[in-house]
Every structure is written in C-alpha cells, then in structure tokens.
Image (cartoon, rainbow, N blue to C red):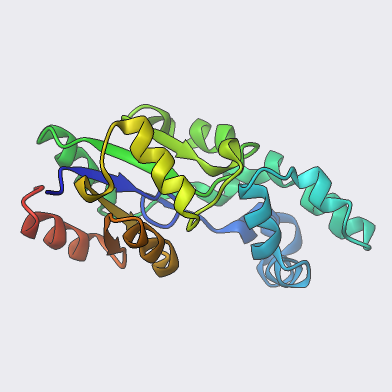
Length: 198
C-alpha cells in the first residue's frame, strides 16, 4: 500500500532554466547556443553525479566557454527563481494530511546550497532528502531509489515517486515504487487523490 510520496524537485517543484545563468550578459539566444555548443545537459548530469564544474570546464577548448562553465555555481540562483505552479500547494496538503514526504533529486553538490538560498524550504520539508551530487549516483540508477528507501525505512512498494522525466519514473518503477510522470499539478493532484493520499 502506498503511504509515502517521494518528490523530484527540478521541473516538479522548482522551475529550472539553465540559460538564465548567462543570458543577462550574453542575451538569451547566445546563452542557449552556448549550452548547445558545450553539450550542457551531458556535462550537468556528470555534475549531478559529483564532478565539479571547474573540472568540467577544463575539458573545453575555448577559454571563454570554459570560464563561463566554471562560473556556473556562482550564477546558479538566477536559474531557479520560480516555483512550479500548484506543486507546493500539493506538497503542503500532503504534509497537513500527515503523509510522509521525501525527495530524490539529481542536483550538483556545488549548486544545491545555492538552490536552498533561493528556496529554503527545500532543506526543511522532506523527511529524507537524497541529493545525487552528494551521493555520487544519479537517477535512474536503481541504487538511488534503494538508498532513499533504506534511509526512510520504507519498502519500495510503499512509495510513489513523482518526476518530470519519464526515464526516472520508469527507474523508480523498476525497483518496485509506484510512479507518476509529472506534467502538471492538476494531473498530480488527481492521481494522489485517487490513491487516497489526498
């Protein structure tokens, strides 16, 4: 029986727009071109697994691009200023109902403290919080879901995992969790209500 809700954070609770780190100086189009040029998604996933942005920057041939990437942690707060509409209200309703809430996030250990400065509740509301960059393992590796369950004292089949990435939801399901592919707060509320969690 599902009795605990495990949240992803970026794209579910917090709107993350990495181009905003550089767009005030470069303009949006050039910032997006920079992200594409350096294959930012792949490099960022490695940072989520524990690699520093300074180390990632040393791999770039262009010194200006390298300097931009190395500066990313100091600019990070710009990228996560906004909450995802409706999600925090659902989280608060779960807490009010006494439902255990936990989180697993693919997030760099370097940028997590900057994120908490913008959204302090991220470090306060979850019973168990697993930040991939601290652990050296990223979703959808089965190990990160098992780590959450071990620390929270839960069996996988007692959890529903919410993520905006379908591959991560499928990873959670592979270890025995229920899964919800997040596409908006209305669908999430309906699913959690149907499961008797709201």
